[in-house]
Image (cartoon, rainbow, N blue to C red; front, side):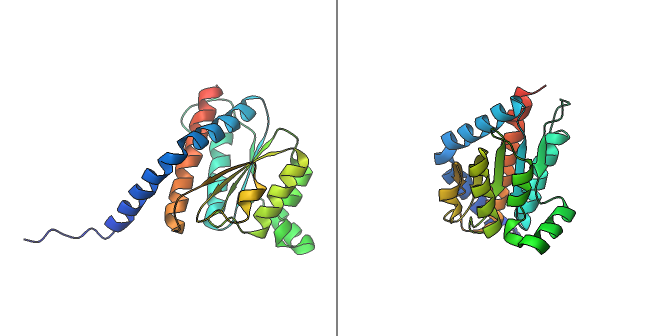
Length: 190
């Protein structure tokens, strides 16, 4: 009798390898998560953004903080810059798609706020412009990236590169990281 083949076993093995490699960055993860938790506990706002699948990570993080992750606690100010289709289409039409996140940050963000960008490549012009705007406005930026990190590596204040070139594995780790942020926030905020 032959053992049935599990069609997703290679993906599981690949994810296990990426998780093992991520251990080398545990201190950076803890530092980023603590930084975000402290800023939100001090009343600052979290902004998130991403493109494609990464946009859903950005929305996921913001909604968990405004709503709830695990515990009933006060809502935390968090805004996903890719969630407002009116703003996105207006800005894209009038200023170009590369400005869709930066223009919103310029209108809303204050010093001490935090921007978390999700990008598997780190090279999207709209992400890079958002990081530049964050720096100009005194907003702390955190880039959750993949592959080689791309141009975002030099634009963000804090960078975590998922050690993989596989977009699905990168996004799976980004989900793990956004949940770590939620857990830290809920530990600090009641």
